[in-house]
Image (cartoon, rainbow, N blue to C red; front, side, top):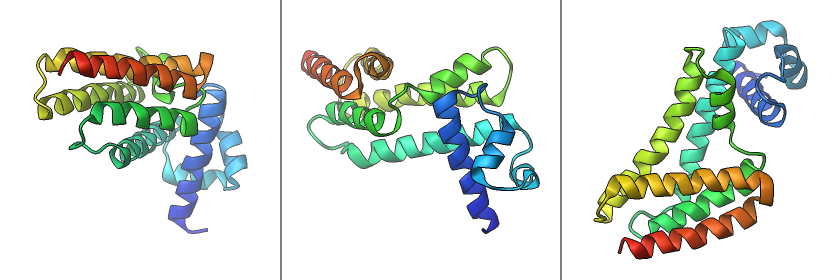
Length: 184
């Protein structure tokens, strides 16, 4: 295995384990074992578990935004609805147990670390995404609309663990349509 393939394998295995068992529930030995790499291989790529968590979050965020961008046509009649639908598909396919970024905020809150900064940054970026979308569509109350759609997606994510991604998404799409009509 090449150096970059080993790093990618470590990131994939770590993300899966962190998602399934939580950041605190997974040790480096388990990641090394399941990735089938040497201990030094992990430390050649990541200086610490925190550094590995940071990279996992950055990679997951990059995949989320690529996913959203691939499904949302900004020039469509209703990019807001497309964003809600795409987020719902993401939940169904890749985030069925809740949000990895919220878990990171909970697990690393108040520890003055890059992990919490990355996770909070992801949430702020979602809000800015909707602000930009609202501006592009000529909506009034851009900040309020961005907060409402961010809250809608966050609520959808939370409800996924209770009622499933499909049903949570159906409800959020219905609510998104109401929001869009009210701001037309």
